[in-house]
Length: 417
Figure 1 (spheres, one colour):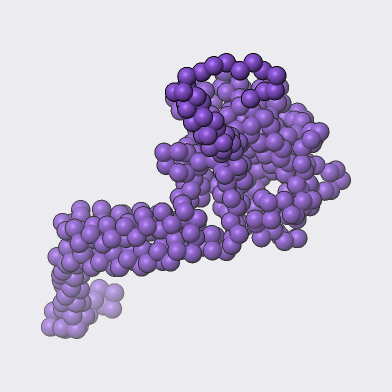
Figure 2: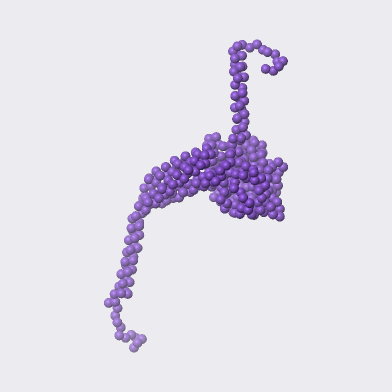
């Protein structure tokens, strides 16, 4: 009670109620504090329904990008939106924006990370651009822009992102229609994101990397640069409002990142970047996580191949029900591995994945056995046709070339006479 404030007479019931309120006030304060910390992303931001990191991948989310690696990582839930007019036609890009971009700010801001990879700024509405800015500033989302012809200041006449609302969020100034490159130099090796990757000097992709020319904004942190005749920022990040943004001046698709894509940890780079941008913990043991991510990707590829074998066998009447049962067992182990991965128990996840992969290998062998059984009549027919053809040809050759009674010896001919 404040000193010098008049005391009012209250009933006993009211006094008890007030004492109860004061008694629970510290608990309420702690709850408010924890809620505030969670809201700022101190414990990492994930989708509350799935426990995964929702990623809105805008630009060129195809097989020649990190998108497949993001898709196979259980922690990531990427959503593709085509918006590149270099890889796709402008009509396809505009139609994709119209159909697949979030229809309101609430949906867009529900994504923990937004990626702009060679997305053409000219095909977005001003509303979309404002939503992206506000999702970072107010919603706490992370924004990543990747270099390319349609990134930053734009090349070959493409629009300048620096003149849009999104440009306010970027940690760099966008210089129009300028391109440079050089050797990649790491400036902040102890930064959490950089330290989470096995980056060593003179890796093949670090020897020469082209990218858009940009300038670091005041207050931003430059993690890496390219050095040649000119020095250009390469990786730059900063905190913006409730969120953060990250600029990569080089491309990570074949347009300018072919050598980078050959790096063993190319997928880990993208996945770890999503963890950093969403304020989730970065893995301490990258090798275990790398192997687990590789297994998840291999499992999905192997399963797709197995389905193709099953479909082929069923066309010839093979009963693939036993294989379906094997796949169910493998999927059960895969689900357990996924749950362990989401709980950040990477070692257990890797062990469960190895077991699931072995079950899938057994299913693949069983599928081939059933396919061969169904095709036994085809094999017999092929053998009969080949054998019959060989026998007929043999009889003809023997008759004409070996059995000589069909030949007559000529005493003279017109020419000899």
